[in-house]
Image (tube, rainbow, N blue to C red):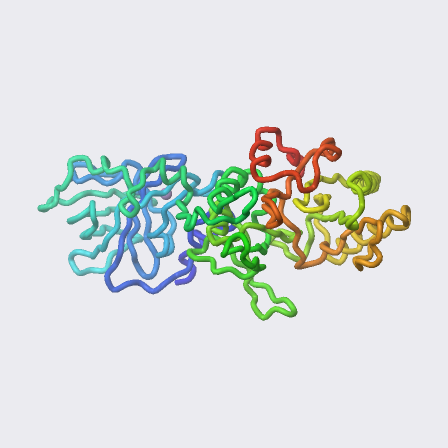
Length: 455
Ligand code: MN
């Protein structure tokens, strides 16, 4: 029985698509059916009939017709999970069935004639009670997976051209609206003030992330996250979040045991929808792990935060960034620069081959120690504030399993709406660490991606 959805699951990468994962469920007493208009490589309609806890499925290239003379080819495809009957949305490029899926009709069905339908070798007579499709229908097997879908003669000949219906039976949206707006997110309290001076509202932040997510997504997707939420807006108390509510599964979930935390559910962003939903839930600052969700035991990047002592000049800080880059260059480690949105700069090193966290930690620590040994009056690898007087702390301690660092393009919940912005190395002397605000960041998107060689 459970084997039924193996093929369905095999064909799909659930870290990329928001289609439901295949789990067999109990069938309803009243069997349900759905027809989905699926604008994929080839336009077609998918007819799905609930049976034994799954949806038996056919792709009908020309769609159903009320004319009994029309014999519509219906190609049997893999069983789909019952929850698929609610799926409307887009399947990302490169994934199986990439394109847009619209819920075109739904309702209940029953077998006619009292015999059990034979889905392997058959002739199935059935009655549909949907919104658009009603009455008696026949599915008859020709050869292989090729069936014909035919309307039987009865009192139902409701429409001459049923396919003139081109909106979702559930949401009323057109195909274009569904694909445009991957999932319409209702933004609540858009006018809530998040920063007072200059004034920035929740809507402004939502708009910012909407514009920036295409650039941001490659750095944040499929990595475990924590966020900082500010539900009460400016003046409220921010709080750190690493376990989420995940309504309707907009985030991916990963079970992980960790010491000092009795919850095992960790979360990751799967797609743009995940970012936008989190913003709707008042998460404004995103922090990421240095590993991908499919292999949380190996780091695929290193992060260094150059954190200057309070009174240190900006030029000294920039000198520190350059010194670290020189050292990394010496080891042939390509590095990328971003503003922190606060006092410092972050240097990120993608690892061309992943390494254990133990290794990542010692590489990062050794590099910081090397800086300290080479220029003892300028740098410290010791995080104690007292050791930092007049120096820069080379913060390497983020490079351990479970540690997070602020994601590229994330907003910072600081005094003003600054972001942690990727910049070119040649901009180091021109761009201050807390200079790029959401407005400036949006304007910079017109320039070419300073981190385009990151991977
Ligand atoms: Mn399909």
